[in-house]
Length: 103
Image (cartoon, rainbow, N blue to C red; front, side, top):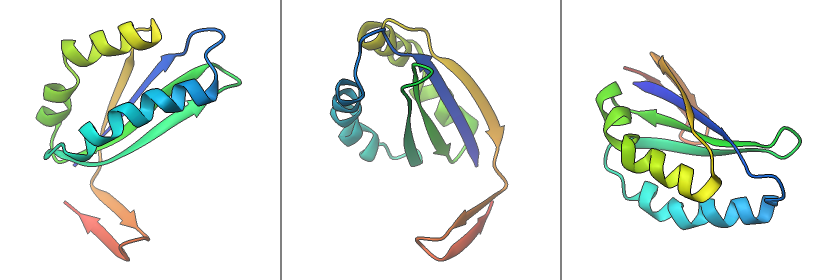
């Protein structure tokens, strides 16, 4: 599994509520994504940073779904360039499911 962390600056003056409206507009699309295991939306109003943490089955999926179309959407919506970090995720502890998942 792969954990991908994407962050970007939010425009000055964009409120938390406005940011959440953008998140909600994309949530159904991510819910329908067959390659995505989990997504957490991020927001830090004090530092003006937003983003997401994605758990993918493999790195190719992160690359597929976060290509130019995704980057353009972030630029158009938030006037920002997303920064990406990718990590191998060999073990996940899921307390909701009551499971420890090892790839």
